[in-house]
Amino acid sequence: MSQKVKFIDKEGSLFYATLRSRVDQYFKERNISKNANGFMYFKAFFYIGGTLLFYSLIMSNQFSPLVMLLLAIIQGAFMAMIGFNVSHDGLHGAYSQHGWVNKLMGDYSFYFIGASPFVWKISHNIVHHTYTNIPEHDEDIVIAPGLIRLSPEDKMTNIQKFQHWYGIPLYGLASINWVLKKDYLKFFQKTIGTYELPKKTAKDYFNLFFFKALYYAMFIVIPFIVLDITWWQFIIGFVCMHFAMGLVLGLVFQLAHVVEGAEFPYPNNDGNIEEAWAIHQMRTTANFGRKNWLTTFICGGLNLQVEHHLFPLVCHVHYPAISDIVKQTAQEFGVPYLENKSFLTALKSHYEMLKLFGIKAQEELSKTRSKIQIA
Image (cartoon, rainbow, N blue to C red; front, side, top):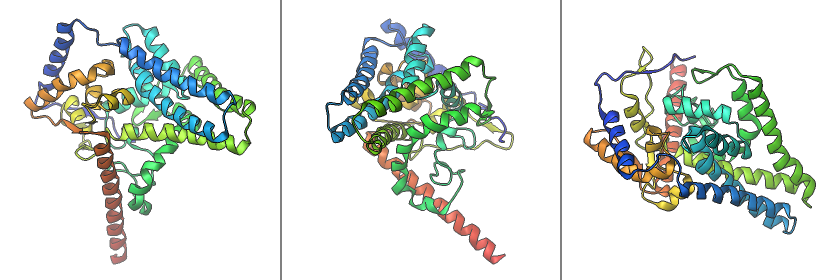
């Protein structure tokens, strides 16, 4: 197990202090809250209501299997967008100053899409946000060891030379793995990365199994009983729903950290990253479609991950406005500000990174085999 990482700011950077002051001033001058506004609550209604609408249409049994399949795919995409636009802010405590509002919008919307808020708050809020893109610490850049290589320190295999062809479609399996396997594995692990999980209470166990059971009942048991389709048609629909959800989730998250320009720093021998935590975030995180309102509406501000990593307690509806402040301050201090102009340019950049890591794996394996033969 790797040692815990510490950030040592030897240069005494004033970047983050200056930036926080300017962002605080932005909200103060306009007399607005950093939390959700009316538009944010509309988004919650739109995505949760849309998902329930598609679910109701499917359960009405009034459509052909082909139409129900299409509705299931759209429903899967909407469920991913609940994660982006509702759950994510609530789980970070950015929705409201009131804990019960954050719990309602965060924890319970997360249960609705089949995920465990207990696991997420540790693996994402704590581990990923602290140790972003640090190999052996940030498990968000570990997707399928041996199949997909997303960092220079990942396990290398021969098949990875083709990962730029199969990697992105493989993201579609992330959701079904999440709701059926991943949450359970991480819940019972002693550590996530190098972070030791707290002792679990009886309530933690109850929440995991009770809300998973409710999810399975709503999306497996009841549809299987009610819908006038064969068992294999149901399985296709369920898998396609999750494939759409997983593909949307996987792409949006990977386009923020595994793109050209993003770094994967490794701690020194003392276990230290020798720069300020905020500057580390700027080197490892990228935006895409920052000025495109539709991209932001769909992605829930996760296309502005730079601002999110620096200000996770600020609701994402404010990110487009404060992004200009962040970019300007970064330029003043000579700090990187990584961004792709659109979703498509970010997707191309991620494709190039998959290709690069796959080729590098093949080259390193070839060198190793050559050394063995020579010896």
